[in-house]
Length: 425
Image 1 (cartoon, rainbow, N blue to C red):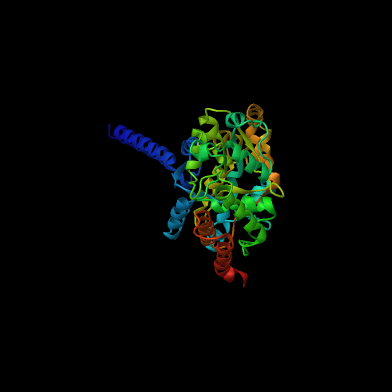
Image 2 (image 1 turned 45 degrees about the vertical axis):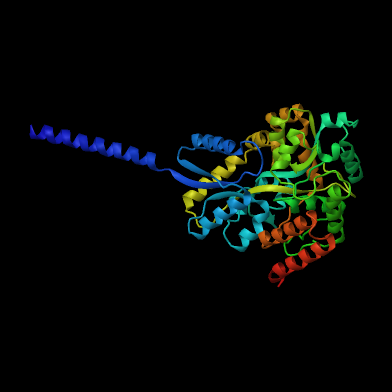
C-alpha cells in the first residue's frame, strides 16, 4: 500500500512539474516599448494598434507596448525622459531630422550592421538622406512625406479655372488664388499655407523652389538670410499682405485641412500625410499637385523615422529588429501608405498589387512620390530644436507684421550661428 501511495505521489509531482514548466514557457515573453507620434488627421493611432496586434499574432513570444506620444516634439520629450531615467524604449518614431540631436546625445544604435545592405537600397534616396551620415545608417524611413498642393476642383470650376490644370508657377498661384478668393476671404480664401508648428518647413519649400536649401548636409551651417531665403520669405508675406489671397497673421497647422474640407480655402499647402484624411472627408472633387515653382520645383521631405535605442538587452534588441522588419515589409509599407496618405518609403511597395491598384483608382496618391525627384532634406542641424525655434520665431514675427524680412532673418542667422559655433571647431 505504501508503495502504491509513493508511486502515486511521484506521478503527481512529475505532473505538477510539467504543468509548472509549461506555464513558465508561456510566460517567456519579451516586451518592447514602441513610441510613436501623430501629426496628421485620421485615426493613425488605431492603424498602429492594428499593426501591433498582427505582429503579436505572428510572434506570440513578443509583446509590443505601443505608446502614443502626441505630437513629434511631445514624443521626443517623453522618449528622452525615459532614456535619461535609465529606461530607454527599444524603438521610437521620431522626426527624421532629430538624427543629429540623438547622435549628439549618443542614445541611438547604428543600424548598418543589423540589416542586409540591399535592404537599405530599396528605400528612396530622398528619404535616406535624413537616415544616414556617410555610409552609416541610423534610422529607417517610416511615415515620410513631402508637402503637396491640394486644390478644390469644384471651386476651380466655379471660378472659371480648368480643374485639371493646377497652378505650376508662383505667378499662376497668385493669379488663381485671386480668382478663388471670394468676398475678401469672408466666403473663401484662395490659399492657405500654415504658419504654426512647421512654418520653417513651408518656407524651406519656397526657398528650394527659388534656388537651394537652407542648411548644409553636415548640419553645421544654415542659410537663413541668404538671398534665395529672403526672396522666399517675401513671397510668403506677400500672399497675405500684398495679394490678399491668404489670411493675415497666424494660420494654424491643424486647422488648415479643416478649412480646406469645409470650403474656407480653395487650395492649401500641406503634408501628403493628410491625403487619406482629405480623401475620406472631402464632399467635393479635389486634386493634388506638385508645389508651384519659382525657378524650379522643390519640396523638403518630412515625417518620421524609426530609431533603435542603446542600452537594451540582447533579446529585446532581437525582438525590436524583428518588429522593424515587420513594419517595413513592402506589402505593409504599401498598406500604410494607402491607410494614411504617407509616401510608401520603399520602391518595392509600389510593385505590390495593393498599391498598384490603389494608384490606378486614385492617381493623386502618386504625386508625392513623383515629386521626390525634386525633393531635398528637411531642416536638420545640430541643436535642431533650438535652431528650429529661432527660425520659426523669425518667420512668425514677419508674418504677423512685428518684424521685417531682412531684419528678422539677419537676426535669425546670427543667433543660429552662435548655437552652431561649437560644432564647427
